[in-house]
Image (cartoon, rainbow over all chains, first blue to last red; front, side, top):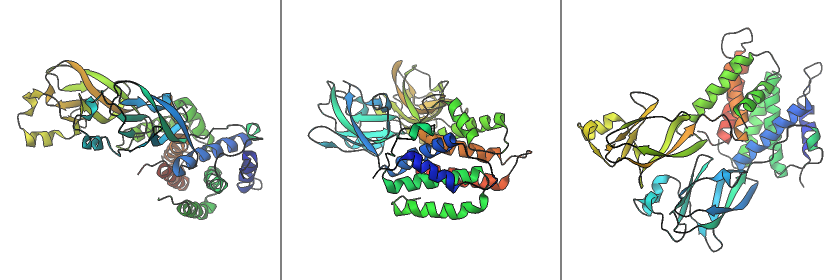
Length: 200
Length: 182
């Protein structure tokens, strides 16, 4: 069951509350938690989306976020009939042909690669345009005010909400200089991440 | 998000006194240092006209580091001038189809093609990390801000706090690791 973000932010504010200390603005708490959700998803790749991607004739390089505005990492490219294999590095395209970047008369996309979080390469360039389906890690929506999340549920699975919450808690413990609490919290978040299979 | 929004967010992560001017500068420094790494994640591409007989070109105004270079239809190897000299001591006079690029020598704002091109054409294709002020992915806000705050509290000042700086450093490193930086 998806967890309501405002309720999670309430929990965060309780966890970092200190008697006689500096009050935590609920909007700031919401924004930091929301950004922690975004990073959690970028790391664990839990919330995915897919979209149709227009492949232009004679073009290999694309700034993929112009078409997929919420994409932060490509995880799969496919057509209606087959999955297209990924090339980890540009140099791997040489296995298809040495002059791979010059091939702009292909009949179907053979492989793909990404560079950074902006550039997608589809090899070879095609003689005529088409579309492929791109599956990607989604940039989770950002919320910056407490009021805006009153009726919004987290897109993250419940177990990953705990990771985002722990990251936000750590950030605020540091903000309020509650330094003695940080080592234990740090250790617990490392364990949480390792239980999710994330290698640090 | 924009660079200005990033700076505003960084300031929200400290409840104690800091210097807004220096914090802004540290955000810029952290951003640029992140972008000159080999594993830079914010990149763009450009096709460039090269001139016959000219080996060295200036970086574009927004260019911080070239991460991939292709000439015509092949990937250029990134190398050092010493390595090229070992291959051919007379390389500086050679011209032909470039096969290698060097960008860390003579001048940090230049790059050199080897051998120098023998035709004037738009055949050089670069993917490079840039010093963008807009279109910064939201996921970078936390690590960049925390890293900037680490610097803010580490330098000698009335608000210096080395213990806090160390913790900002640890937390920034955790966020960097989550985003795939080694």
